[in-house]
Amino acid sequence: MTENPSENPLFNSPNSNNGHRPSEAQRALEMEARLPLTGWQQEVSQGLEYGLEAADSIRDRTIPTFSRGELPHYAGINTFMKAPYLEDVRRVGEYDVAIVGVPHDSGTTYRPGTRFGPQGIRRISALYTPYNFELGVDLREQITLCDVGDIFTIPANNEKSFDQISKGIAHIFSSGAFPIILGGDHSIGFPTVRGICRHLGDKKVGIIHFDRHADTQETDLDERMHTCPWFHATNMVNAPAKNLVQLGIGGWQVPRQGVKVCRERATNILTVTDIVEKGIDAAVDFALERALDGTDCVYISFDIDCIDAGFVPGTGWPEPGGLLPREALSLLGKIVQKAPVCGLEVVEVSPPYDISDMTSLMATRVICDTMAHLIVSGQLPRKQKPAYIHPEAQPQLVAWT
Ligand SMILES: [Mn+2]
Image (cartoon, rainbow, N blue to C red):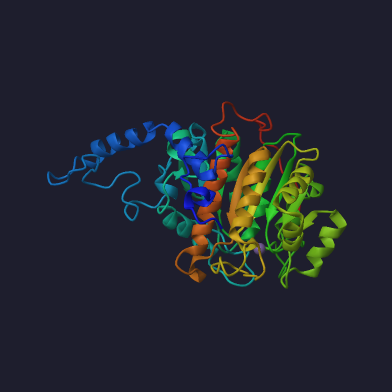
């Protein structure tokens, strides 16, 4: 180490890079200056109109009497990031992104509670601002976001719930709004993908699945439970098993009958060790090559338990030895940057088992990072509906008795 701090690059001001490549922080500072404030100003003026001007003693005259919009973070009605609640779901196509809750945990085989996942994620999402420093993204300035509330699921019946979920997701997907689904247990992975496949015509979707568990067996406890979504999803011609990429699988909770199906259908698995030893970039290349081989878009199914159990205690089947949060977020971000993504679900957040909302916060982070990377890569806002969305709904895609 040098004695003189001015000769040590660690001590240099981030704004004087001395001819070196600018740091991420320096780029972030510059990107922020280029972001508009129009959305914020509209939110303030609407807040003053709807929520009335503040009491005379309040010096900051952007503050209304009734909390409207982002501030303060602990106040307000809990939609996702306080996005407008879209009660008339027929209008969902007017928005760039639609958040939808699927409060279904009847597919759970151990710890229940993911029916409260959408509520838990929405509640802690109020903590977030719409701006991300490193990515130089401000969601409020760059996209329109709505929260359509929850799908009406039937707790005593998985199959009826699946029909409701597929119908709801098909509606959002075909409208052109980018669907972001708050689970719910992982049994919803089959009906969400089925909803998308209904509007793919002869196009195909690759599934990138973050999880500690394979979720590929046909039945569990005699029903299509949260251990089964990919067996049934990959029975649809629009979602071939050869385009199913499974990241982070491993440990002591991978049923052997699911492993057999992965082997027979040649799904594409990377364990945590595979990802760490290959490196993130090689893992991303592997995922994209397999998921995009002959397909038109990619669906991301993010089981929060892909992250080490120490970071996500509020989940149905916690398994130690998973990805570190920064590994998972890096993988996700690089995949979203390079793939035509058609939808995202985040599943297996179980608030009754959570501690300090940590697991719900991780889910919020996954969702916000995805939106930001979709903006940075130019996928959002959409200038037109993607060509892979077929206007007509297909009939029943796959039979199962
Ligand atoms: Mn899992």
